[in-house]
Figure 1 (cartoon, rainbow, N blue to C red):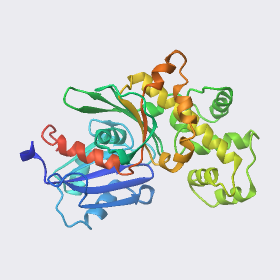
Figure 2 (tube, rainbow, N blue to C red; figure 1 turned 30 degrees about the horizontal axis):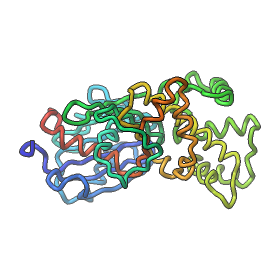
Figure 3 (cartoon, rainbow, N blue to C red; figure 1 turned 120 degrees about the horizontal axis):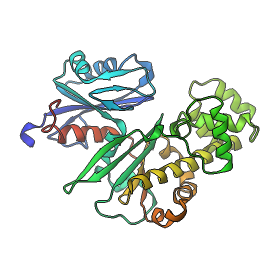
Figure 4 (cartoon, one colour; figure 1 turned 180 degrees about the vertical axis):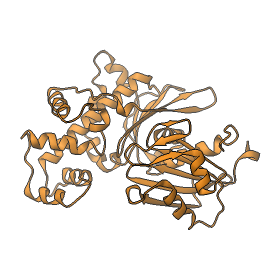
Length: 341
């Protein structure tokens, strides 16, 4: 395989909030990118503009690219779920003057990185008992909610995409049932992503506020009025021990309970005896709250399957570059097996 690998590869993690790009050398390995940069996705009209800007700053010639994108990839095409970008492999290759471009779902890219992660890249919430060769599930709340899984083929793990984040929101207690009914007055379909993601946190917050369950302090009202994205403000206020906001704390507690239940759902659906890996940009920031146990309580609460759930390892991915690492790995290792690379 070494003879047919490209010398360098451009890898990208294309999300609704951030676009990460990096150039890797297949000869030097994937741990040390030759160049890398992060761009705010919404500040640019297209991926092509971002890539052209990035490559103009890179001295190393690049001929091949692989992008993990936030959305389903069908026949080499993708519509970014939370951006007005439509991507197509051949058009991207032509515009960027590259020999080839390959698109894959961003959670599939993250899943590709899981076997490469080291101990320092993870925080374990439940040790469980790994079954060698068992299926691995990946659930990642970021701007949206991504899901994927890996299966063992005898020689290694193979990643598979999923759009499970767009399945129906399934409430697990009376408060969540009321929240679902509240949201159904506003939306025809209430998905897991609409609740369990960066864009979902404000929905939980608004429900608690509008139904009078918790009061919004004036100082927080002023902060929220001055920002376009309320999620970082809500999370920061929930974690602020000097000026605690009960509304934000309950919002975060509700989010964590829903995430734990959904991670458990994914584990059951694919029988994730190899473990569940939780990714995305939100979780490392709220790690102190996750350690308190509410997520695992919701994860385990599966009736007759509770003992099975207790045996499944659960880890939080701490490495913010895991998805781009997985995209690069996929590009390098599949170079000999793909006509587009």
